[in-house]
Each structure stands twice: as C-alpha cells, then as structure tokens.
Length: 260
Image (cartoon, rainbow, N blue to C red):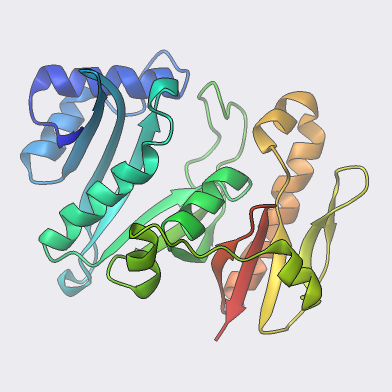
C-alpha cells in the first residue's frame, strides 16, 4: 500500500527509514521539514508492507515562471524488504501530479549508477538534457562519502508516449546488440582493465558506457572510480551542451544519446 503521509508519527518513521537507507546517523531530510512540505500541499508518501513502512518518496512543487509548474522529486528510499517498490512509488507520484495538472517531474541522480539510469530512462520513460557538476558538494553519507556529487537532471514528461507506455509495463529498452550492429559511435567505453576509454563523434545518435558497479568500485579502487567520474563528466556534459539528450540505456549500461 502506498499512501500520502500527514501525521507526525508517520513522518518520523519516514525520517528514520531514509537515515537507514543512506547509512547515516542523521537523516537526509528531517520530520519537521517533511511536515512543512506535507502541510503546504506537496508530495510526501510512504509504502507499507504488512503494516510496516518499507519505502518513501518526497517531492515539492516548483518551476518558474508559474506556467512552467513542475514537481521536483527529491528523495526516494526503499529498504531491502521493499525492493521493487520504486516503480510503484514513482507511478503513484506520477498519478498525483496528473490529478493536479502537473505535467513535468524532475529529479537528479548519479550518472555513474547504472541501475538507476536504467530505471529512470527505460522503466519510467524519462530523458535528460543537463549535467550538473558537483551539484550538492562532497557527499557525507555512508554510501557516497568523499565523492563529488555530479548529477544528471532527469526530466519526465508525465503524459508523453514513453511515460504512458512505461506505466503500462512497456518500457523503452534499446538492445546492446542493435547498437553494435548499427556501429554507433561511442563517447566513452570500458577498457580491458576496467578503465574508461574516451571517444568522440558528432553523429545524430551516440552511446556512452557506464562502469558495471560504481559503488563497489569506489571501495575496491577509489582512484579508478575517480577516473570514471572525470571521464563521464567530460563525455556527458560536453554532449548535452552540444544539444544531445539521454533517451535510453541498454541493460548492459550504454547510455543512448540523440540529437534532434
């Protein structure tokens, strides 16, 4: 069950859940802020399994000028028992927006995290056109401590064909073998030793590879993880500045970028 949260006890439970998910002594967002957001008509929701909160999602309304109203979806967290609920939480948030006439949702994520890229672009039908360098400053949570916080700004047009099809269980899913058959140029690929290998192209469609598991790589080889951060920053930021948009990701971790 997914429901909006308005009671203080529920908001405190959500605060604790986020602290557990991000492995930090203090929560990334506190219950008094959650209460203010909920009370002022923003989106604060929790997911329950057998009566226990196992996930949550928070966003607030923004946009300038007013006719460009959107929801900034700030934080989504799910504990192990609720794994797989992320999609349902985002669809609940999507319906909440559409019921209020909000047609666009935005959020940020680390472009090196392959599973999140696949979720955002393929499972949900979003896209990205902006790369944000060290957006939140150096991270301090237990998962990302010491890392610079480069982010892709995701834009999800909630009534688009891609979003509607994804909501119906028909995600956009480009196949890696198709990319190879079409001989699409690569902006960044994985070298034989796991290192990032830069490339270049001005073709209409290009690809950019991600490391298999950047979280594990940060622990096993911080220097190589840092090299991937810089290489991804150079490749994606330059492409997006040149007018490309990220429109999909293969299951094997290749971003697909297209230019109109």
